[in-house]
Image (cartoon, rainbow, N blue to C red; front, top):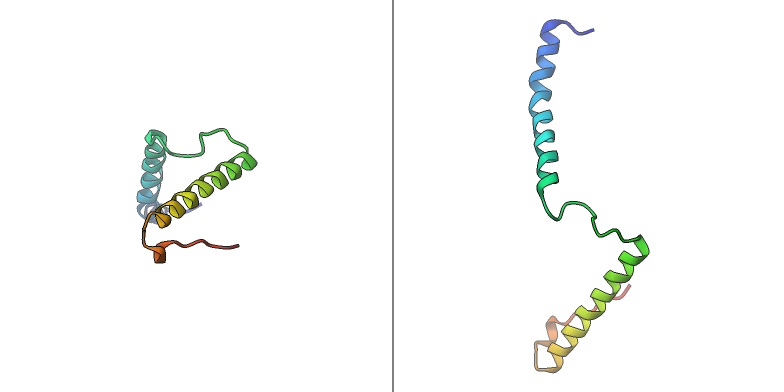
Length: 78
């Protein structure tokens, strides 16, 4: 066991860290977008992301054909 002075020293060092951890947990509970609450399987999440990417690329292509700046159109290949 630690002696009185050593225990007090540990409390001074770890006390603020523990308080910050507790505050962060409370904040995480109250934030609306915290965590994955969409109840999707990983495969469904990938499909949703792929669909969003396709829509984004289509939007960029449409802007480019309407006279947008073509230098800003970037398509990344894997």
